[in-house]
Image (cartoon, rainbow, N blue to C red; front, side, top):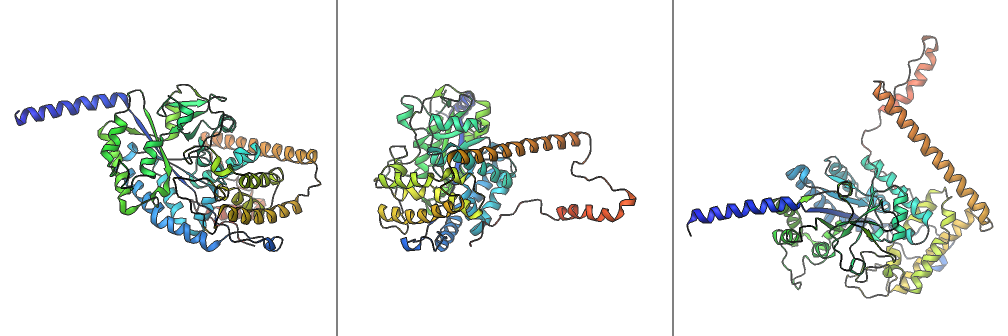
Amino acid sequence: MSERCRNGGSKFFTLHSSLFTKKIMKTICLYFEIHQIIHLKRYRFFDIGTDHYYYDDYENERSISDIAERSYMPALNTLQQMIAEHGKYFKVAFSLSGVGIEQLEMHAPQVLEKLQELNETGCVEFLAEPYSHGLSSLANPEAFARDMQKQVKKMEEYFGCKPTVARNSSLIYSDDIGAQIAAMGFKGMLTEGAKHVLGWKSPHYVYNCNIAPSLKLLLRDVDLSDDISLRFNNPEWEGYPLFADAYVDRIARLPEEEQIINIFMELSALGIAQPLSSNILEFIKALPVCAKQRGITFATPTEICMRTKSVGALDVPDTLSWVDEERDVSCWLGNAMQREAFQKLYSVAPRLLIANDPRINQDWDYLQASNNFRFMTTKPSNVGLDRGIYSSPFDAFTNYMNILGDFINRVNALYPLDIDNEELDSLLTTIKNQGDEIEMKDREIERLKAKLQKLGADPDEKPAPKKKAAPKKAKAEAPKAEKAEKPAKKPAKKAAEKE
């Protein structure tokens, strides 16, 4: 065959392939989780009542600094370069736990600053998740709602936008949890595309919550996600070495009607689980190049929820997650030690809902973190578990229960056990009503500000005082001057100081 025929055939095939892939318009949803373990210090029985600080500051600083240097900053810089190169074509989503943000504020604020830079590109979405990265969704609906609301406010402070899509700690989900998330006003939720839930169904569609049909569900593709986050650098894996073009070809070969491919993982997979020496970042950087050649697009979770209809309800009566082969919650609540610690912790949840002590609230967030229960697991796992200072599950349980004993004593000292349930419910109702009233007034203020802006007036401008009130003028202008000195961009804040 002549060179001309070969070229012509190649051009025809390329054109035909381009038209075909453009027709199906497959979309990749790329999402990364950012969370940092809070390391507890060695806390003995005799420390109860005398030491109210529970954390290993050295290990917390060392670990977050190491992860920031080896993973977060190189990965975020790469994603920023990808956005600069591909513009609005490339999209990516993140979620950050509140306790993780607090560690970044103290020890690696450059990570938060880089995320703010990414946010300004308009190609990034930030999702909501429990502030504590805890298991409140399995224990107390009010505590879960408060955990989510606290994180939403944190996202608004840093990135100026209220999240519309949520994810639970470790993608924990059930029909009941989905109903709670929908009641909070979220439009979509990420969860695991677990085979025992899907059965013959594919994770490459948008589904909806079985109880709350308005909540759309995006399901993680387990194989495609784990090929990057778990197997990429494993020479014994049959798919090793993995190249971006072959990876994207697998996506392009999926049935035409399967259009949504959700690739979810921890950001630390890029640099920690898969070291930088494995060329993992070069692989990630090549994904949009290969995808664009095959007519595959990228989108954020909200964009997918807005433009893609659900194909039907997903029935999830039992709780699932993205952890271990079972894809359930047994790694946190699978043995008697874990369940005892879990029940003991959340036994004080109603009293914590009325707590107004910053240290108590911070300790509550840190002690809820799911890794505290994971360290107590006795299950074998294909994914290595670093227990840190603990020599065994029982060692982790003993240390945690000592800390929890001191914490509960402090809670009881502030909110005694002799407060009966009726009185406690009355206090909670009062607090809730006050919160609803404040929220309603805030919405009214925003509405009036918007109305003033339409009329051409500055909603923040104060009326000029009359001449005869000259002495009061300086007094009125002082707050305005003080306000002007504040920076436009919120810097990383310090977490609550130790006692």
